[in-house]
Length: 302
Ligand code: SF4
Image (cartoon, rainbow, N blue to C red; front, side, top):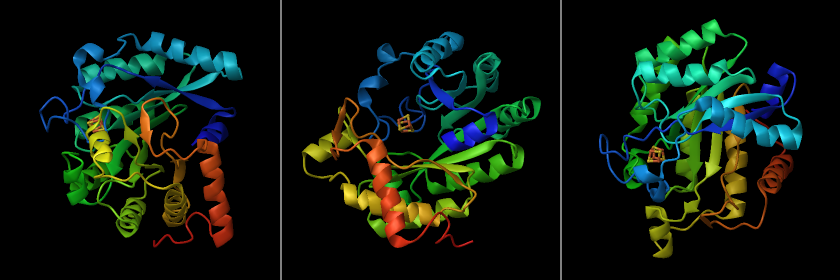
């Protein structure tokens, strides 16, 4: 994605994360309570929500770091925290308007659940894409897996049919919006062939980009408890490298790959501990593809 952004905007574009104070239907009880088993439970308490209502100030604060360190000038507003379409259209419009009006913002990316979108919200996204053709308007859906049994096991509180419906609706109502799907490798109960089946299904849905990462264990989560009790084993480095290479091979050549690895050294991450940086893991994945003599799309079944 950074290459795609650099090509489109002529220079590096840095993501500034925004916490707009959303919650999630999987937390507030409208779909379920407790959240996904890997989601950080400490932040469920409303008292701990950090949402700064002033989007502009969040962008300025986030951009300051990149300006000072990398002389950055262009930024993407990344609505990342919780479910960023979980409100009515008028509030969404206010929040997104604020972000897109910032003079150094060249686009926005909005992360959400596939069961938290509808025609009205997508029409808003399409309006931005039409009114602001110079900006990138992106929506990211957490597909995570195509297996409903896994979704149930991780308390995802939506099934794969929701992802398929969200992708179809997005393509129909918001054809000019960049569509990204998230996939997680190493969810509880999944083996490599199940993960590869999710990759093939993701490829069939032909997203504009994907974010693929390993399942990691964050402290104070249900998954952390399961991991401590020996009920969950975090993915091994070598198996993730193999799966990431499999994923690249299976994606359509036109799908941008935004991410290949999850958190490995952030505070709060208990497992896996691979002793590598993300860049080193990406290097191992590149080496694996070289060893196989394959490339993106080489196993894409169109
Ligand atoms: S959908 Fe996202 S925010 Fe909601 S509980 Fe799951 S991981 Fe957390």
